[in-house]
Each structure stands twice: as C-alpha cells, then as structure tokens.
Amino acid sequence: MSQAVPHEDARAAALLDQSPSPLALLRASAARRPDHPALVYLRDASDARPVSLSYQQLLREVETLCRALRVRGLSQKEGVALLLPLIPQAVSSLIAALTVGVAFPVNLLLSPDAMASQFRLARVKTVIVMGPHPALDVHARVKAAIEQLEAEVDLVEVPVGEPGSGVSGWCELLKDGEGDDPVTANPHAPAALVHTGGTTGAPKLAELTQRNLAAGAIMAAGGLGWRDTDRILSGLPLFHVGGAVDILLSGLTAGTTLMFPTALGLRNPEVIARFWSLVDETRATIVGGVPTMLSAMASSPRGEATLATLRGLVTGGSPLPQELKRNVEALSGRPVYQLYGQTETAGITTAQSTSGEFVPTTGGRPIPMMSVAIGGPGAGFKPGDQGEVFVSGPNVFQGYRTNNGLQAGPRDGWISTGDIGEVTADGELRLVGRSKEIIIRSGHNIDPLLIEEVAMQHACVGQAAAIAMPDAYAGELPVLYVAPPPGATADHTEILEFVNQRIAEPPARPKHVFVMPELPLTPLGKIARYRLRQDAAEYQARRTLTGPGVESIRCDDNAAKRITVTWTAEATDDQKTSAAALLSELGLALD
Image 1: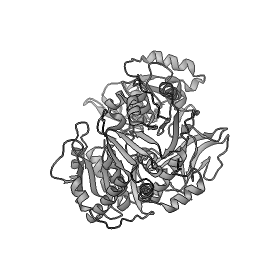
Image 2: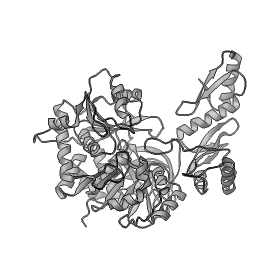
Image 3: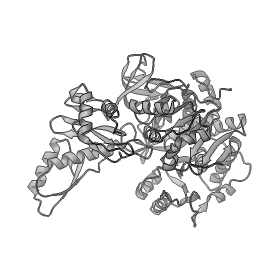
Image 4: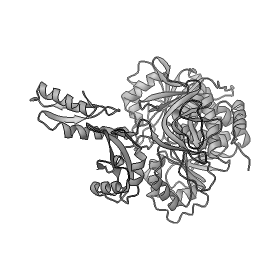
C-alpha cells in the first residue's frame, strides 16, 4: 500500500511546498488515482446505488466552477456563501470558492438577520444555497437575508428537494465554466472564513489562507493515519473545520473515499436507526462524528452487522466521556480515537492515529509540523507538564475578520487555545479543563468533565453537562444538566445522590441536577453550554427575585451575566433598585 501522506515533519513540509493549496492537493490525488471514488453520496438511508464521483470527475467539476465564478466577476477578495448540506456539490463548491474567492460555509440554522450581518462582513458576492427541502427551510431564510443587503448578490440554487424558480441554477453556473482556461491558486490569499466561538467564546469569523487549509489537510491526514484504501463515513457538516478539513480535505489529500450518509448526515433518524448496517453496506473503514453523534450511534442496535471492514471511530470537538467511549467500543468491538484542535488551526493539533489498536483516553500526540507548548509560547511539551495549551504551525489562522480588519491573530506564530492540558507519561496531550469552563467554587477550580464522567455511569443518563451557576456566597456552584437515553426516564434526586456519593471532593459535588428531554446542541452537535448557563442564571434569578412586581425573567446574554426582567405595571422604582442589588450579589447585571 502506498503512503499517500507523510507522518513526520520534513516530508510533510516538502508536500506542503509542492502543493500549497487545496486545489493543488486535489490535483495530486487525481493524478495519482484518477478513477478511484473520491465521494460517495447516499440519497437515503437504504440507497442501494449511491452517487459516486471519481477524483478525476471531482477535479473537473471544481475547475469548471472556478472558471464559472471568475466569469461571473468574482474577485479573490469577495466572498462565496455556501449553504449546502452533505451533498457532492457542497464539496466542489467549497474547493472552487476558496480557490478563486473567499469561501464562507454558513451554519444552516442561522436566522435571516444573522445571515445578513455575516454576509456583509464576508463581502459576499455569490450565494450557493440548497433548494427547498422538507426538513430544512434554509432556502427561504437565505432569500430573506439577501433582501436586507444593499449590494446585488448572485444567487445559485442547488436542487436537493423540489427545484425553485427565479434564481440562477446549478446547471447554468456549470455552463458558464465550460472551456479549458487554466485555473491557478494563490496560496497566500485569504481562502475561507469559518464561524467560531473563538478562544474567548464570542462569535467570530476566523480567516484562513489557502496554505493554512492545505497545511491543515496534510497535517490531519498524517496525524490520523489515513490510508489510501480508507472509506470514511462522516456526518460532520462542512461549515466547521471538523467536517471541512479534518475529514474532507485531509481525506482527499490522502486519496481516500469520503462517504456522506444522506444530506442530513448523522442527524438523519433513518440513518441512525440502521447505522451499523450502513457501515457494512458501505464497507466503511473509519466513522467520524462528534461525541453526541457517537451517543446516537450507541443507541442504535448493532443487529447482524459484522463491521468486518471497520478499523475504528474518530471523534473530537468536545470532551469524550469515558463511559460513552466504553459503550461504543463494547457495542462495535472497535476502538474510538480522539483528536483535538481549533478552528484557528484549520483543524487539529493533536491526534490518536487510527492504528486499529485500542488506546487510552487522551487527545493524542502533536501532528506533523505542529508545535504544542504547555504554559506559554515556546514552552516545553514533556511528560508531567501542565498548564494552558499554546500552538504554532503552518495551519494557524491569520486572525478574526472584523469591520476594522483582522484582529487577535497569532503572536510570533503562536496562539493560545484557552484549554488547560497536561502531558502524559507517554507524551500524549490530555485535556483537563477549559479556562472559560472551569467552575470556581470559593476558590476551588472544578473541571466539569469530572462531574460528567460520574454522571454518565448512571443507566438513566444519556447526556451530561456540568456548568457554573452564579451564587452569592461561593461565586459559582457546579450544577448538572442531564438527558436520559431513548426510552428511559431520569429522576433528578436519584441522579444527584448517585453522583455526589461517587465524587470524593465536596466542592466538586453538584448542587442541583436538572433533567431535560434532550440537552441543547450547537449545529455541529456539541452541547450548547452557553444555553445551559443562561438557564442556570435564570433559575437563580427567579429564586432571588421572589417579590411582587416581577412578570418574567430571562437571560439572552451569551456570557450569562445579564438578566432581563419584565415588570408589572405596579412595580416601583424601589423594587427595581432592590432587584438590581440582589442580582449584583450573584454577579449578574439587570438589563
């Protein structure tokens, strides 16, 4: 078997010099294996004859789209907003857009107002959007967003459900790119804007160059140990680096076959219901998904599936509870591997290689060309080191795009991740907390994962998230939110007792357990902890403001530090002043 990507620094750097853009990497794979399937798309969960594109076909479509976008007047500095589910056109659109303009893959769940605001910041000239679909109203929201813009936008519709009307279609766009004019790429040009919470938690657009993305693809493929015989089944969306770089671009770089299990991916209930059979039918060697997706897989019966081709499952994006790892490994008989990274590094920074062997729970080792330091820029990375994680490499982003230019970019090539990590005796990175998520109770630092790991051992807990609730005395108190697995019911009193009996340190014992039917998720499938912090802040505010005059209380602040109170007509100024003082004791401000 040929090694498609290098696994050490010198050869990885040489490959990046030879192919410093995603288009160049795709061309290299197409030259090496033109007829090998690059993409396989299942139109439904039982698709016996899925759509398949070879590397040569994919490259041809990408270059055609590059020419078409240039014919339509797109410049290197203008944005192409991409609002497509997991379909083959999403792949060719992404690579073409980042080659000749600035690709802006957009969260499909954004409101029209949020889309319009981000379109302006991304200087969007072209929007490529899915057509009307029974499960997603993206098309209607995009049209509403465009109506708010001052500039003309070229709207291109890709039929997924029923074709619409009155817009320039996908076939017309491809016709504009017919010909054989050469397509070139500028490795140092801005290539993509990716929405992220950033290392400080506030929504941002991270700017990545073509070389950043090419480096991220090479580094991820090497660190994860992709093989050119791999068939990777992934449901990760392409508006996040996990799906776009860690899986898609890295897989194309290695010459693998990428498989999309329907347009909705692993959010499709029909896919989850027969997931393990799909692994057999697609001959998947690798499955990729965030921990909440793994939790859904674990709820699906394996049945008669042999999983003969499966080498392992890869996860990242949020901490992996050990109990979930054990459950998935017991069900599948295959190891679960972890990766760790950020949008700001165009993908991953450390990874466990998919060797087929079972491995302990860590974030793995630094990937090729990646420098990881514990405690500060340029500090060491040796067994026993513990502190904030800093990273540097050719995949590190340029900064966050704002109306005033790029901000908060790397300093001397280094960025802070905001994560707290330690180096194991085997030289692997283990995350021990997030600086912004650490719960500080009367001076005691509490890692939420400690509480969550215990909660996940309870049979009636399918999801768990520990967060900080404001408290007048302790500053913050740990509280636990849980959701039961399908078919189960959870009792908050029983779970609280179960968890607190198993946590040795009293400060880490949660004060309350809140049971929800399901925990709120981000579009990528991570638990939306900010929503839980808002809920906890509202809970404390309601307990505190018990007097007359209060009609409703809510917290819409992403930082969960501000409370909005709707007052009755009888409320007095004294009551409002008193409420502000009481909330202040909790560390909350009254809006």
